[in-house]
Amino acid sequence: MSGPYDVVVVGLGAMGSAAAFHLARQGRKVLGLDRFTPPHSFGSSHGQTRIIREAYFEHPLYVPLVQRAYQLWAELEHASGRDLLRITGGLMIGRPDGVLVGGARRSAEQHRLRHELLTAAELRTRFPALRPADDMVAVWEPRGGILFPEAGVSAHLALAQAHGATLRYDEPLASWRSEGDGVRVVTDKGEYRAGQLLLTAGAWIRTLVPELNLPFTVERQVVYWFAPRADPALFAPARCPVHLWETAPRTFFYGVPDLGDGVKVAGHHAGEAADPDQLRRTVSGAEVAAMRELVRRFLPDADGALRSAAVCMYTNTPDEHFWIDWHPQQAQVLIASACSGHGFKFSSVIGEVLADLLIGGQSRFDLSLFRGRRGGR
Ligand SMILES: Cc1cc2nc3c(=O)[nH]c(=O)nc-3n(C[C@H](O)[C@H](O)[C@H](O)COP(=O)(O)OP(=O)(O)OC[C@H]3O[C@@H](n4cnc5c(N)ncnc54)[C@H](O)[C@@H]3O)c2cc1C
Image (cartoon, rainbow, N blue to C red; front, side, top):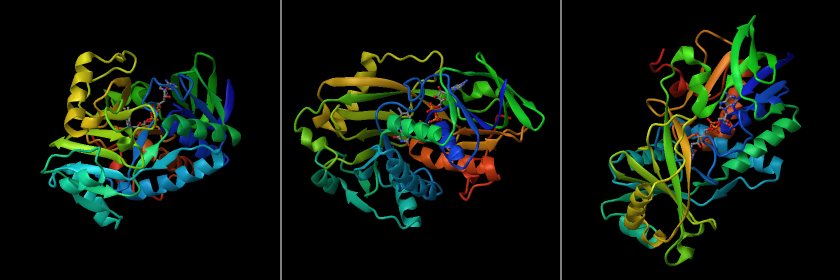
């Protein structure tokens, strides 16, 4: 038995590593546990790059959060001395009445963000790698860019440790129970006491609170890197912003410029349902062919050899907004699932939000979209 700690953080991926850092920086005695050694490629935070964007099509309420996230990424870069963020600009491309273009415009207008609306012809001239259909338009935003997820997780963990956090890897949480007004957590290596418990276990989170029957589903997602077929300079970050496409109503894919390993492309949602312990990690020829079909249509010069592919997991809530809330029966247990395929960019600020909730009981951000109020209980 060891402790007492102030907080045990279970899961040290994107969200848990950031929370451990913010808690430790504010003087909390933190124990962090992970079933693997993060950053690793078994969860949701691998694959070299993640998109960050400000004109948030999903809901304008995310804009203040992402603005704080940008500040915190910059601070983390400074404190860790690592490159974590590269600004390329961002494009949301689709029909003018689609959710992607419509939602991005709504956020940009409501928050007075710098942006431009481009016709298909303007888009093709300005960014020749991209070939939208004639009836598509694009919202261009200057602050879109690329985050490096493995480096971000490593930086948060290193700084958490520098501020005194104890981090234990390859030590999964086996069970936990409340004890007085705190908790006792059990692993196969020991038992620990703490005042509070933070669950940030990504795709495995439902198994840690089975009594809640959380309404989350895990979705398998494949990402691909294709070699440019023609002029590789067209896909360099200087000439090719990060780009999201709505190719049919609520059907999305995205692309990331070539940073040396090829042009990264992937669908957003529409993956098969998955069990995190039985994830199909091989990618079939049919999956590659389907992705290549999209590449040929919208990024034809990226239709070179497949360089590599990787399999990752989304943990989706029914409405695809995050879930950040206290356990309904245990006031000392906080549950955070900030994924649904769009959480990484926020992890710097979600870490701060979780620390504020655990330390002072509140956050300065409007978290109303994220309350655990939607079914499953
Ligand atoms: C292919 C793909 C592309 C994406 N693209 C973007 C993007 O462009 N922009 C964006 O903002 N977001 C994107 N996302 C979403 C983003 O990556 C996720 O929202 C984020 O990584 C989720 O972080 P997490 O901390 O919840 O999960 P993870 O980072 O997976 O962390 C969960 C951790 O919990 C640990 N764990 C599990 N069970 C236990 C246990 N019992 N005991 C101890 N530890 C445990 C795991 O080992 C893991 O380290 C993408 C996701 C995927 C899969």
